[in-house]
Image 1 (cartoon, rainbow over the protein chains, first blue to last red):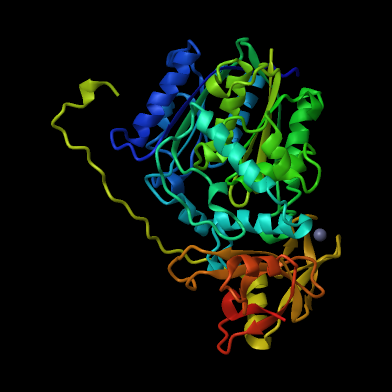
Image 2 (image 1 turned 45 degrees about the vertical axis):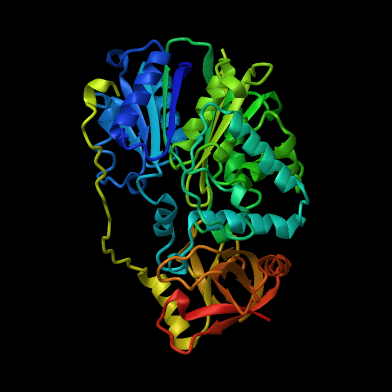
Amino acid sequence: MNARPVYLHGAATSVGWGDSRRSLTDMIFATVTDALRQSDAHMDAVDSVVIAAHDLIDGRSLSSMVTAPAAGSYLKDEMRVDEDGLVAASFAAARIEAGEARLSVVAAWGRASEGAPDSVSRVGFDPAFEKPLGLQELDISAVRLSAWLARYGDPGDSRAAATAARSMRAGRSPRALRVPSRDSVLAYPLRQAEGPKWADIVVAMIIGAAPSPVRVGGVGHATDLPRPGERDLVGMPALRQSAEMALRGSARGIDSIDLFEIDGMTLVEEALALESLGLAAPGHAFEHYALAENVNRAGGSAAAWCYPAMGLMRLAECFHQLSGTAGATQLDTAPRRAMAIGSSPLGAQTHTAVVLERA
Amino acid sequence: MKDVHMPNDVELITIPGNWNFDYRYFAGETASRFFAELKNSRRIMGTRCGKCRRLLVPARTFCEACYVETVSWEPVGEEGTLEVFTIVAAAFPGMPPPPFVIGYVTLDGADTSIANFIKGVDLSDIHAAGKSLLSRPRVRTVFSAEVQGRITDFHFELI
Ligand SMILES: [Zn+2]
């Protein structure tokens, strides 16, 4: 059986903080409507909806019962994942490849201002061995950095340079949060500016079988070991494997990728991913991140961040770059091929990579 | 949203919410024996994978990497190496007052590391403390006077 090609038709992003004028469902409805408008599509033609959301982030139980219809689910072939938004995109693409769907809404969201997503991560740890120690998601990022520092030593000014580059890119992005939100208290050896910019985020994309200028080249997934202490926190093998799988699908090497959009809760995950992918030499992650113009053009988690919308946000950035609609962050030469990488809690255990290419 | 939904004289409402559910987590036979060894024998046990031969600590029923059941129980040394750590700065109910150190320690004989509090670190200067902890120092297991069969029955101290 030949898989049918999958095309991207449009993307919309809503980023804000604590705007009491809009409920979560209003935000989802407005963003999906915007994505349909960008795609010249109408909900009547949509035959598949795939959403990524998390009950504990949303603070509404029963797995998106209240929120899914805001993405257009009513009487449609709908799937829900409590995983990163890039997993939702992967499922939607698989349905189209198989010929089971023609036009799909993919949506992901997280509204950090309504709850306490950093505290919520504490309940994700193993209840017998790690939860009693009070660890949270950001602590794993700190532990990851300690592993890198122990291996390679102090990278000098390059960490500050990477932080500055990230913040400059976020400042340029039309899809960044520009108002104060919540500051997490970061654990040593993390520095405050390396953390995420908490935000209320909805991302919607329209993908389908009808040809458009941007198509899916390949998709990959991989899962790491459960206990953070047993993972290769520096090498991030699941990230590397998901990227290799996506590249195999597109039958091209990593050298063919013009842009990388990588999700990480902090600068640490974003930068160390470059070593994992082989783009930066071991021990040179931050240096490479600071200098590379084609990595996280929109400022990564410094622009806006809330699980589980971020992988889809990275895919939307790739789509905007490939279609020349990125605005102030647009690369001078519009890239031909881009890779988006999404990750899940805790400590980026699962990774999804998607290669997009100009058709 | 269009103005049709929002006349000028309507007050925007925010509804408070809170989740506070109880759970009971069944630790199972393997973890229960691990905790019984802490309480009754004050020793830390691992289980060995018959395929990759790694001694997995804390003990578990199966090796996730090889996807086979573990085959034997073995105690590990009281001393080990602090592999990675963080110095927690955020306060949270039920936790020690910050700053405090949590780290992953590979105990002698083990092939994996186990998380716990690292005590006895001079935290008057966080950066100086962090720098010394990055050298992967040796640590010793210290059991509490009162043991309850929980992961918090012990902690690590710098040697
Ligand atoms: Zn094994």
